[in-house]
Image 1 (tube, rainbow, N blue to C red):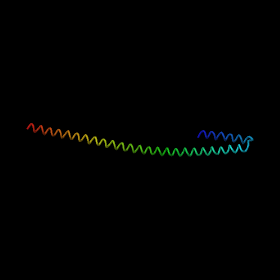
Image 2: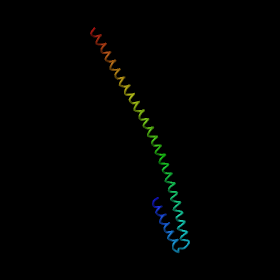
Image 3: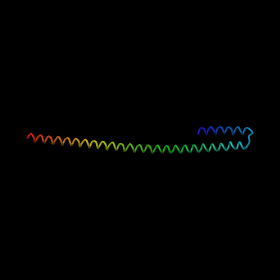
Image 4: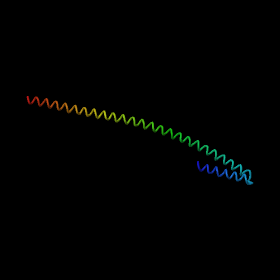
Length: 112
């Protein structure tokens, strides 16, 4: 964009210099036409840049939403893993308690 602006300024200066000197009409018309083309190109560049920025902003919003969903699912997975490990610990504790009770009962029977 900066290069286009520099080119536009240069040709504007050339056009003004040409108008101050006795140049041909065709050269002046050529400069003016070229300046119009550069102006249109700069406008198009600004439009394309704005469109690209809008697409980029939309992509960032989508990325943030996706990351939020991912974090939510990861938290759910962590909770389910914790529940599963707590359930396994309870089952293991219950098995140890049952084993201790059955040994105690066996011991009481053998002592009697």
